[in-house]
Length: 156
Image 1: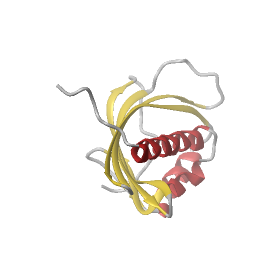
Image 2: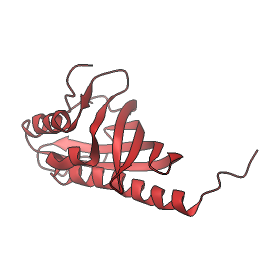
Image 3: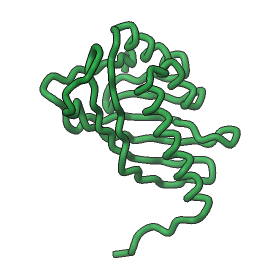
């Protein structure tokens, strides 16, 4: 068994930038800036559920978050960990990370119990020197008994 991957300086820099992209995604949702989440995707990028519906393109992703916001106040914290990154080229990468989500409707505080744990399978593309999501696919692994999806991605 090998000791692990050899990481070049270029791959290390890409990893730091992609990790910052994932953190920015979480920050915007967690701090009521979800109307700008679509800007973190490529023009043809998509976001959706494993085996289910997808929002494709900036307008559809914005619409999904706008519909969520219209449901009222929600406090959430997205905790992404365990990024495993595979560089496909200097401008393309694939990644898998884990989301642990805490949240609740209405003003907090809410119980400190995870709502869900999901695997995220992502593609990333560098466009104009900036890393963006080409795709984000969430796969539910664990869910609280009262869990209900809050984002409507449209039809599959």
